[in-house]
Length: 189
Image (cartoon, rainbow, N blue to C red; front, side, top):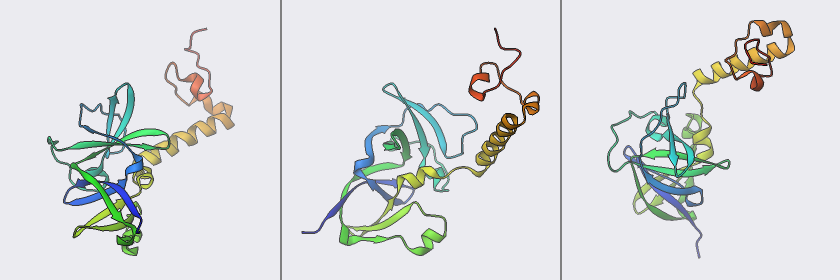
């Protein structure tokens, strides 16, 4: 008896992708999404899912495809990643697929070398190819502009903590002094 891998199939553009069903929390229609300032382009924003705040990633943008106007077919796949819920906007959620392990091949080296390290394999299912994804790698990719800004901010904070004289040049917003470990003269006593 051959072992099977159960994946949730979904479409982004013309392609069908799959993620392990064990990672799926639920599938929901696309509600109103609240934008987040200075977020990477592919991070669409956040939603309130029955009292839980869930970050939402647009997989079209994440995969470098042009974004389209939302339709009634769009869905958010809510997955659990590192103990948190994350939503993935897809064009449509298709079905649960049971792919025999004998019908799954590892991702071609060309995909790995081309920066598509989030593809773990290709499954053959009813004359179709299903691109199998590693959600951790899909979500780990960051916008280089934001990484540079975050690194710059971290360096400034580090230099301020090592060189107390540098604290005078580091600006803080009221209420953030405690988080940054500095004291502000504008803070109430």
